[in-house]
Image (cartoon, rainbow, N blue to C red; front, side, top):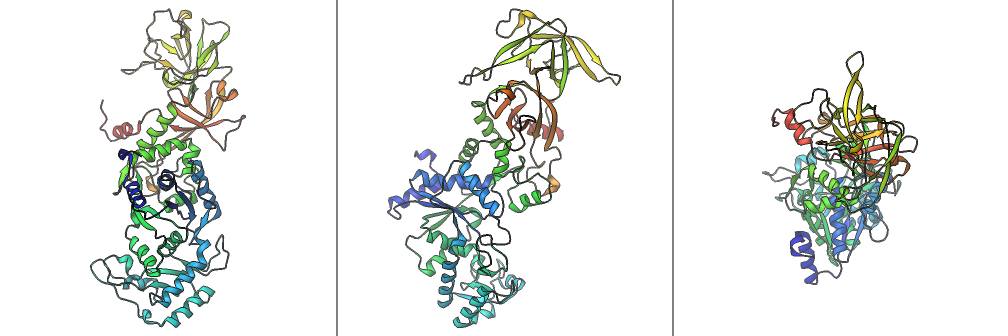
Length: 557
């Protein structure tokens, strides 16, 4: 690996290997199965599995399932699917913190016997009050003076379910005046009378993350426990537990990196869950969601997401990434991969009065700068549909498409000229009568007519009707707080869009560039041959900033 591409985490790993600290690199990805993984998890997956791959080690997938009230098997499956879809494979079987409940309990007994842990009976409010503040030392609970025998008895009775939720907790006995408030006698176990999706009703107490995580790392032989920056202060607990218990062979160490923040996006599981439960979206895999399942259903590729993670790098300080960079990555990936086809979202009928009969035109699926081959036949007749906004009766400056005075080229076909505009009783345009120039056929044009653009079209009799879902950003502001910031125009459904027939009959791909419309994906759930559905992945260029500036009155004229 070149020094230019080496991040600080890989530098740490290399130094540890060169020093002989470890013989093999072992990382882990330890999500809590209480929701679907999001784009932030993709970064963590790429880091943990990527480092293990780069140094010929291995990465464990471990579910941090210590809160039975929020966890579910379907979240486990979603996490497994995300890792595999991104192209990674964990070592051995999926691991669970609940696998280690017996060992964790025995280590808790050891801490009690050492005088390093005690059963506290303060209320939650009292514990918070006794902890003190950043400027003021905390007070230790009077229950910290219980004897080892009394603590062991209470802990066993907690485990057996004798007490109510919140009646007792097990706390580490460290330092109530520590500058790091996390070290002020942190909780190790709490009572939860709840059914666990794996262990059932076998346990009535469950370990806290700070206690269970470091021991699970040790039991699995993890060398580098990589987590996001919000756990930086928790590292002291991580080290205290392992050092106090003498768990040093091999000794895992925690290292933190900056978590992913993206504007116009939320990645709080609580907020994502609210969107799902309150039905602001159709589910965890709604294509507007920042979940990996949502991005996948929208049409993002694993390569585009991993490239995004690579581009933003691994930093030590939190920062905000522009969502436009993620959108650039999917455009960049699809540009050299997908066929170009024609779709008309808002059809306007055009009758070419001087054209007789019908023909099939040869058209490539790919532009000249894409090194791929593939062609299809485009039916052509006197009756076609064009995009409604590709015609203007009173065009603004810089309008290069069809007008009463300005001809235009039909992509892969002929140049047409508007002859007459037909309107209904309300003044709405219903049809264009046009003429075509027989010597202007694409690829063999001898007409001498100069046009400034080419527009998409479909032949009226063979075009296929499809549903198109135009997805946009879910939030209207850069730093959304909640549902009050939702974008009311984040989804527009067009039921009667028209596409060229080869798209449906030949199915050259599942992702396409609809000429001049954007990149689209055949919805993997709702698509059928009888009722095709396409999701817009992303537009051809970032128009969002321009739109926002226009809304603010700051756009250039």
